[in-house]
Structure formats: C-alpha cells, structure tokens
Length: 193
Picture (tube, rainbow, N blue to C red):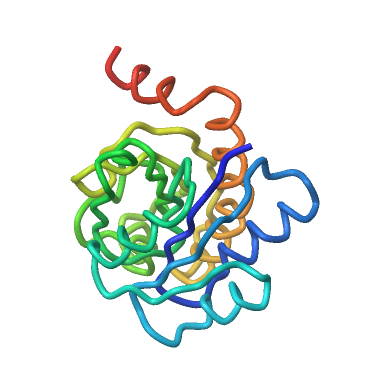
C-alpha cells in the first residue's frame, strides 16, 4: 500500500474521489498529508473534514519542508496548477493526471478548459485522460495509464470536461494501484526502452 501526499489548488474533487475509493478499499493508498499552494481553498477544508493533515504552502520549498515531516512513497498532483519540483528523494515519485490523451493537447498552457476548447476547435471525436509520472517538463514523464472517452459532434467544451473528469475518477486510482503493484521503477525503465 502506497503512502501518498496529495497536492491540490482548488475544490478537491480528486481528493473526494481518492477518499471515497480508499474507504471502499479499492485504492491501495493511504493519504498522509494534503497541501495546497492556494490559501482557503475548499480542498483543504475537505482534507480536514476527512481527517487528513492539511496545509497551505506558497512555493516548492514550503511544500517540501512539510513533506519532510511525513513518510511518503508518492505525491499525487490532484488539480495542482503549478510546476512542482520535489525533493531529490521523491523526484521520480510524482504522479499527475492530464485531461487529454498525451501526446495530444499537452504541455505548457494546456490545462483545464484550455485543453477541452482546443479539442472542440480541432473537431476531435475522442479524448480522455493520461496519468503519468511528472518530471521537470510539463506532461513529459512516463505514462502509467490512459483512458479514452468518445465525444459527440455537438459536445461543448463543458460536455467534454464532464466526460473526461468521469474518466479521470476511474483512471487516477487505477494508475495508483498499478504503481503499487508494479513499482515506480517499472514505469521509468519502460519509458527508456
């Protein structure tokens, strides 16, 4: 079972999903700490309600100082809207979810609604999400898991976002379980083959 830190920047919808799946015993992780780079966000309130230690930290150094006090195997970026630089001991242990099928519609500037608007503008009929390890470049780390969703011709960017988020709620826990069963090194080595 993985010991996990959760980094977030907003409402904590992904934290809700993690918490529910841990309670249902279908996510092989224990949340050790929740940290937000924004003050007074709903995600921190939810973390406290669930009984997780919850902190605001303004930058990477402050985040890493908090993490140093906890025993953590992985760090899940759950709607964390900043490029994160982990401590050296956890540099290969940061997991992110992206709202498209990487390598499409990813990289600097492609997050949230910008991804779904770009998909709509291009006329895509398939989207989805990608769970991957994070490195120093947006959306370039080794892929752990992907889940596709079909789009309709008349889907709006909001419709696309809703479909993709539903897929994220399945894919992120599945990816964490894959990391628990296969180990972190498996994915980094696979990406180098």
